[in-house]
Amino acid sequence: MEKKSIMPNAVGWMIGISALVLFISSSLRHLLFQSTAWDLGIFDQAIYLISQGQKPISSFLGFHILGDHAALVFYPLALLYKIYPSVYWLFAVQAVALAIGALPIWHLARQAGLKDSQALAIASAYLLYPLVFNINLFDFHPDVIAIPALLMAVWTAREGQIWWFCLSLLLVFVCKEVLSLTVVALGVWLLLFEKRRLYGAIAIVSGISWFVIATKGIIPFFGGTAASVDRHINRYSYLGHSFPEIFKNLLFHPGLILEKVFSVDNLFYLVLLLAPVIWGFSLSGIKPLIGAVPTLAINLLAEDPLQKDLIHQYSLAAIPFLFLVVIQTLATGQGLLRNKRTVILWSLIAFLALAKFGYFWSRYLVSLDNWQATHQAIALVQKGSVYTTSEISPHLSQRKLINLTNANSSPVNLNLFDYVLLNVRHPGWASSQEFANSLVSQLKKQQTFKLSYERDDVYLFVKNK
Image (tube, rainbow, N blue to C red; front, side):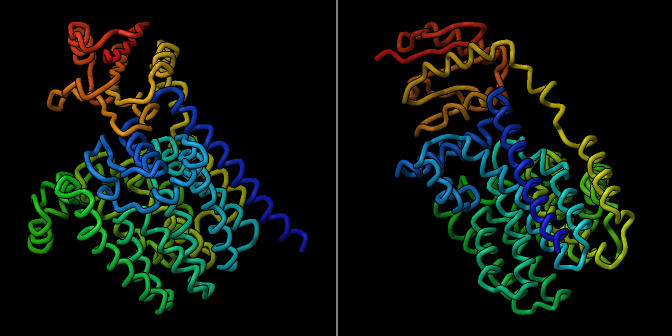
């Protein structure tokens, strides 16, 4: 009995330490001006506006935030901003959501009959899974909240707790509309292989229903044509330029799919995704991977390379099912590694090889040479509209109008803004030094703006009142 009481405490310490490390890492990245308008600035602005009782119209996107992915979770998150409006709330929520996924993994492992040491090893492997660390560094995404929710849905289904199961699914739905497809796949697995017919039926029906409501109702209503799901179709342009055309090609031209799926890029992506947990895979335990089919299909078919790495959020929904495979494999006495020490050692090696902690002494330090000047300029910006770089935007996004410099877009009417803040030395994503220099020259000639601050290639222009 004493040994069993120690293990949950160990898991608690692991979760606490992991959450703290994740929070410090994302906060430090933000302080080093490595977070961006897309996506941190978008979400911070929307949540701030909700907390102020205003319509969350994203000036980055040009429409209501619910028109993006029907992520209703922003409204409860805004309660934190009512306490104190700070982007660090989002880093804290993300860190806790990612770390606390180890708790249902622990319970699922024990539920499957694994020993305490094995359950602890799998929980450790989850916390060391490279994507968990990497996605924490990529701004903030509400998708992370769905990871513990999906794991809780499986655990409560097996425990026969139907109300907690439904609540877990609801939490998944409000994170992002496309996650409803993952819930449908989860339902198929529960129905066919777990023999949880009622739970499987609930997941399938609710998942399909929410996907239709979100994509045909909420997103078009709040975002209009600009927010249509069609805006992501360019990632699958080889299949067609509309959903009907894509479905037609999927049915009648399977060669297009096979050619794309069986590519070197996809093979490399799958190796990256599976290598940290391949020790826990077996043919008999692979059935839970059905839940990851929508996520994997979307990524494997996409042309966008960002959907095939361990840095961005696109593979998040696959994580719970990878570890369900590991648990089921070990529960049947299979798996290449079954000892706690070897599992943790493999996971640690995978973390050191694939986690992007090295960015903190490489690419994250590129703007350190005028870091102080940028902070000083930001401190001079009061309430009012701002035109600035992608990397500075998340530090000033708590206002109704803010936009980022973009060398590839149409010329912006600078008179719309009260402040223009530029870092010519580090012009940021979607910009260039040539573009930034031309803006500085243009603003210096305009009588409507005056140069308020200049140091180390950082320029702050303020509109004359």
